[in-house]
Image (cartoon, rainbow over all chains, first blue to last red):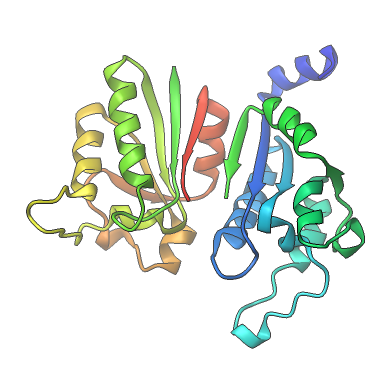
Length: 131
Length: 119
């Protein structure tokens, strides 16, 4: 963080919030309710990052069809995050590879980072909300 | 230090609420403050006053209520997560109150550390 950013941050009481998404989009409610926190949190003008690791990478998978299990496909909401000024999305490379996925399989632009780089990013946060 | 606590799992099914409670007790014993305990996901079920475990077991809901009364802790149940699961005002044990997710973000902003207890 530059000095200027830091000064601004202190004046506006801006903290770095990371939402760490670890679970598949369906099967449990964690992904959906994490997204609900992100949307509310956007109104607080904090520095927000979303990270997708483990089965959490499936949350961003293109072509989700949830009708068969009687649930709403909420994945289009990830594409709307831009409108909330939530633009820092990160996906763990190892998690993608372990599942045979690449960045092209994702429904939004996200930066692909290795576990070590993500660790450093996590270290730089003020708040990590893990779902 | 000023701690915020997030509880994301219901009582008994999961260790998270017990761990959060024990963390809060230990932190207070060491002279720290608890800024707020926020109950989210199935964690909202911790606030259910109808909770009635066998007599030789701990009553997790009552433990939270007693801790809140003793130390004047703000215990917030998420309105959206609560509505989904039928946790409404009339079901709340003493010390719990219902409010929005903004209270969680606020806890992240105001507390020195926000500690998450979940799966």
